[in-house]
Length: 247
Image 1: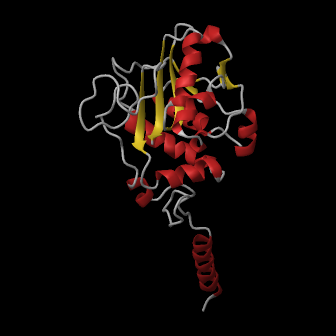
Image 2: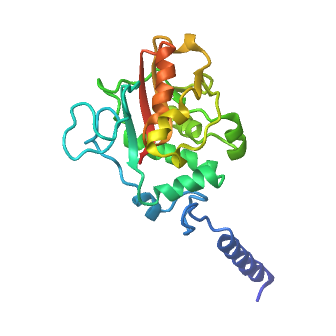
């Protein structure tokens, strides 16, 4: 066998071995993913269930019949935001995806999740849900951000804003009080848990403007409602809520 043929076969074997050892796999289930290293496979993506258009006009929960104003999932009054919309139900592989995203240090999932969120909610803006002047991600306390390494809501808001052509302002709100994780609190304590946890850094930039607060997962709505409260008290004309998922 000629030396050139031997070298060619060796190179082909080396490339095949490289592809096998470093094959891109789904960040959630570990299955091989063609051409999307470290992201999501088709099976995981297909398990994400869009909420659809039949929703509560206030909190964005899926509804089986038309809801005129409020539903049983809405936060207790007063509700400081005008309306909320989420892209998907928190079912299928979405909980595992968010666990990997938030707690297993996979910030690279922020971009594809935000793209899915945008593709699902791209037509959400209308007379009832006006296009905001800017997006504001739910801020993390600096200690939790140090522990996690990033703010997942900020990653979603920045990419969603880039795709939608809406400015993302990460400098307008801060978390001034460290709070236990909302997911670990019983529903009746969640509003109290985040009371006074947020502050508006630049009220002049908020006054008279339409703001959309971006969160990753909406559950009781207490966190985004507290964000909306401080924004409205700082002079925001309106506050809407955008989220990736609704639990």
